[in-house]
Image (cartoon, rainbow, N blue to C red):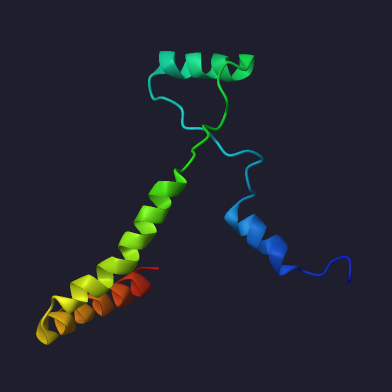
Length: 100
């Protein structure tokens, strides 16, 4: 590669802004609360990122409900209702594609 060759990856990073070295934590809007949060972060009394753990049982229940839900809903619909639902879903997908 020539030393002055334009690299697309470099241009995309410059155009999109350089990535932040660390994900920013949400800070309170109130100045006093924000100051306390900064002090807590600096002294190690608060971790920068809250750990969010998901319950595996809840994930499994949600997955099963999602599998059953669509088929059960379609079984209770008339052909005209299924057609209307499919048309509405297709229209929503096309609108989402146009907006991006």
